[in-house]
Length: 108
Image (tube, rainbow, N blue to C red):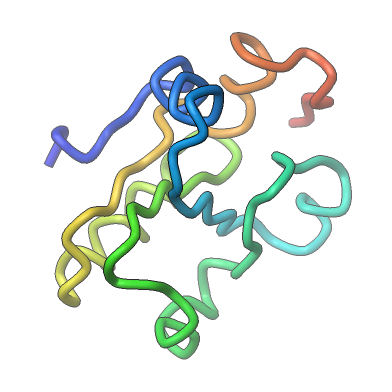
C-alpha cells in the first residue's frame, strides 16, 4: 500500500506545474480552522463515506490530514471503493509546513 504515498515536494511540483488534481483535507473542523492548504476541499474523515459522490473519480485525489495517518486510511478506503488515482500526502500538513510552506502554522 506504500505506493499511494506522495511526498510534499512531489505535490508542490504538481501544483507549480498547474496539474489538475484534488487536495482533500480529512481533518476535523477545528484543525481546518487553524490552518489549511489553499485550494483544498474539506471533508472530515468520518463524513467521507457519505460524501463520496462529491469526489471526481476521474481526477487524481491527494488526501491529507495532520501527520498522514488518517489520510492514509481514507486513501485506502477510497481505493477499495473504486477510486483509482488516490494518494496520501506523506507527513500531512505538518510536513507541508516544514518542507513546502512555513507560512502554514504547525500545531500539536
